[in-house]
Image (cartoon, rainbow over all chains, first blue to last red; front, side, top):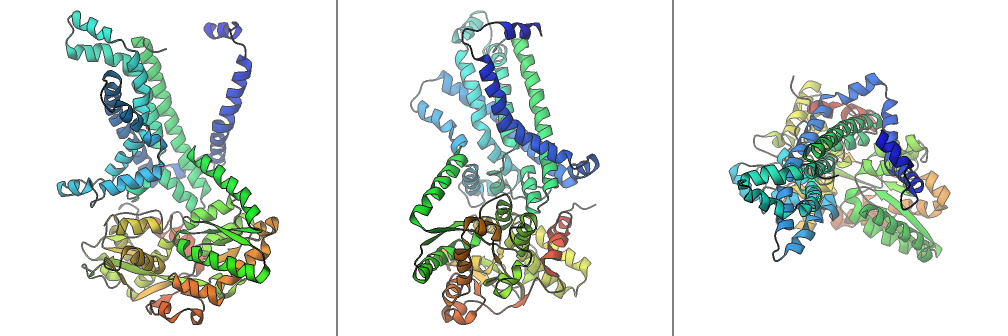
Length: 282
Length: 335
């Protein structure tokens, strides 16, 4: 508290704090808070009992479980493999590195529906990849596994792009020092490198998770969309809208928002804790 | 980002359009009518030019019927709507008041210049021997149909199956629900729209039979080669009446009423009806269509939505597709 009071009074080199803070609040308010507040207000108009009935509907719960579950799996996969990709891109110089680096951002740019259609045609039983999975009894397209594939695709860049700069900042010499002090390679990785990466990994994980939870466009093409099996929460919202049932749609959306907020909040706390614990980042 | 860019481009285009055309109409339609209105709009523009000397250009918006209705409710400035379901136009009429409640009586044939029906598309040679509804629930048959919650066409498909069940089980509601439940247990993928389902069946090779609009089945056959698929007409189906309506609230504001009315009326003209049949819809006035086009349509026993079995969309919509309706009950987990 004392620290904040001091920054408030302290004169900075460049003026304009008031102006930029005002802009920040107005912008966030208009672009983020007002639409979300409208959602909350609309769901508040439902009344607690009605809201609870809509939110605790078994089909809603099944869809929420699938959406958050698949998003968690996808974000976890990316936390591991995204970090690996970031490591390769930062630590090694090889032919085509720039190209690969640009490829990472493609999931950002590609319309998700296009991604969904492309993934579906790959993983469908007659697709390039699907035809080899089919005989093994692996069903990816039109099954929950397909949802994980789509979510992994759309959320990959978040982990890579958050971990990359932090990895770039870690001095190679630290590893050399660790080695000269007698650390094994395993110890160097888990005692020196990983702790420094934890805050960035958590940020990347949280961003990937948030992105995956709300994903709609790519998933509906590959999921199969069978209620209780492969129906994601965003689709359920669309279905409620299709019934002109705005209340039902709002209830599902509000529950998603609440869960997502709690998850992101917890991850933020974890991140703050890991920064204090390991003392990296700022 | 992309969306806003696209919106910006559309806005630019919309601003630029009046410079070249005296009048611009926006027809908000559903997915499978793309090819029909592409042909019809050109014919109408030519007709309007000779009639009035004015240039008119028609912009199209296609998408799922319910989604399109919601876009109009939320403010999309449609001059006319040509949707898959009466219930969707009713929703616009009720929530916005831009369309009068009696819209269905303003144009001939319940405001449906063309009708269609629901048929089956099967793979060449019909390897699973699918000829009628009961074949769909045979062991090992996979059925592709979109989700009736999100697709207008799928609602017609569902109701056609319900009409069959009503006949087969002599109105025993318990047995009819049993059949519907069994039918949807054979559906491995519930796409959100009619086109998506066609893609799943045709391109991905999923399923043994696609339940779809007759016009969509013909189109798939034409686009993808009759050497791969066959159309099977079931013993009983439903007369699907995709309705059209003028959006009074919008045309009066934009001053496009005259052109918009002419546009809808032209759908009923001999030329309009001919194009309708050419694009695989069943014309309201078969006399105007080319005989070769008419010969394609098999004779089917057709029920209509206004039959007592359904009691009109007003009743059928909430009973079958509303939250907690029969379709939701089909997917209720066993207790």
